[in-house]
Image (cartoon, rainbow, N blue to C red; front, side, top):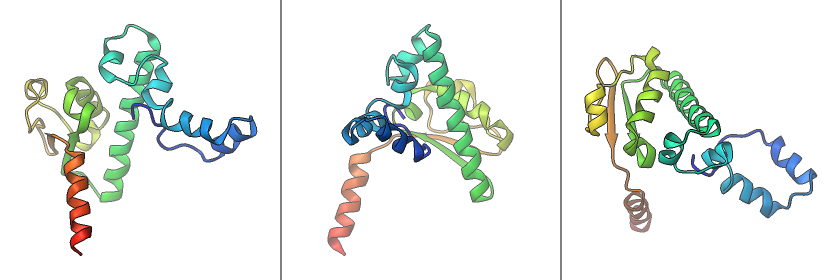
Length: 153
């Protein structure tokens, strides 16, 4: 995540409050000052982090890739396997390097990318037993469709 903290131990929140940080300060820390920005201290933008020579940028990218691979592994175990993986949204759609690095983390599941198709941003980029897709996200349309469905029921 670019500025949000993701999963944390709830005790962290209590500790921050015990330090005297206000509830609004904790909220700002968790939602605006964490994620890639908090880890790197440089930017929330993956493109800037990939281009940066700073070790903090490289570390933030490594954590992002590690967590992506960890989530794929965890969800694959819960689902009993993996037949298709979809990369979407800003980083998933826009960063062939991050897609490749995450695929390497999950190679044990049979995840492999065609380097040329990945670099070109093709829709189908996988080779091997796991289908790998790059699909555009349209969060506004998904929200509108969900609201429309609720209003009709």
